[in-house]
Length: 508
Ligand code: HEC
Ligand code: HEC
Image (cartoon, rainbow, N blue to C red; front, top):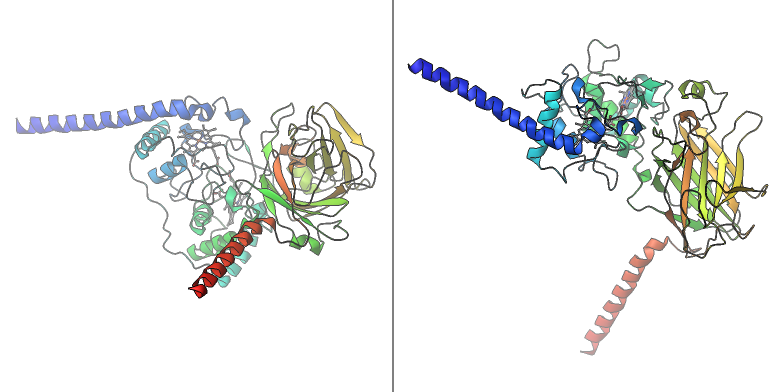
């Protein structure tokens, strides 16, 4: 009798445990259908209505293959912490301002909508889709961390050339020599390691060490801890490479939440090319690009995340130095550009857009090439053939269908250099050549927008990347940057008060 009762209790216990797990999964499924299915698909197969327009594509959870995990390379499943971290968002990392999801992807962070428990319910549902159990999975061991001193970074640099450069490029700018696809057939670009804020799973040494040790499942990036691989590295070597990769991050280029371009006034001639030392004095601002999806020829697989811009002006001209990292130079006689190109290869191009000088100050036309309110555009185009060379043109536009190329030969000049995965292009144009030219007034400001074409990614015509209107301010000559004025004003007021206090004291 005692035995039977025990069996009954045991059965009941198992059953209730199962029921408990089942209700967790059901709760998770309800949340999933509401918030996740649009991208990841009703059945979790990565095929929601939005999926066709996204690169990287949303994960297919039925395969159970996860890219951003902390478990060993030969353990397929992620840990519960991994799932919670990726679902909740990467808030605590070098994240893109205003975005707490996985950087530079469409995957949002959900911590503002879902509590911890709800996140664990959705995670339980995701695990059930791949048939994963609830057994705890352990993370890789981080205890062998090597201090990031110059010796470690130097050792890492040598290892990087041998193990990483074949995909990430010798300067780490993601200028691959290979055309890569992931296991799901989507185009992938090795990350630009100078842009730490675009890393999906964090840019701290621990995060990068984890990627090197585990690899990125489903992509070509292998595990460098796998003893079966010829490229295997010791634990200490993997920390050295991680330390080197961290040193490549150019955080000064990270676009801020509300970037403003500060143009500096110069006496005399403005630089014609990117190598001129006059650029050293100008402030740099980064701007995010997004695909043009408003008119036909849309681009859904962007290969460039942001541009960095400097600006100088004098009484008659303005010059822009525009820099961006691009996997190839898109020159048709360059074997690498041809190999990487998706279909036809077009020249790379970049353009700066202003409200036409005919408009009232502060007037903002439609940012997509204007409308009833006109815009003026300065465009640079890379060479289409060796003979033709680089080109520059001024366009006056009142919308995409009302474009007029101005005959302004020689007034606009543009000059670009491509080096190890980076374009540096200078566009120099007139401020007072015609009434349509942009107006730059000392101490004033104007809207400005940028557009970019990556020809090896199929960009041409209306298919390109762009920013919305941004603000550009004009520093007065001889003055420090204008953002110092509030500080200076504070100091003057403070000194004045001290003087007053002192004189008041003396009188007492
Ligand atoms: C707007 C589209 C979109 C929505 C909505 C969305 N995701 Fe994602 N999600 C993505 C994309 C795209 C990726 C792939 C990023 C990559 O490959 O690096 C992704 C990746 C993930 C990953 C990481 C998998 C890995 O390999 O490590 C998890 C987990 C995930 N999503 C869960 C969810 C959950 C849970 C929800 C709903 C609460 C959700 N997603 C909603 C687009 C979306
Ligand atoms: C065979 C090609 C290949 C090699 C070799 C390779 N990577 Fe990668 N790496 C990639 C690809 C592709 C991605 C982007 C994967 C994705 O997001 O889908 C990537 C992404 C990364 C990321 C971004 C992680 C994140 O959170 O977004 C880092 C960091 C990185 N690699 C570092 C390295 C280092 C360091 C080495 C050398 C030890 C290396 N990689 C070797 C192809 C490679």
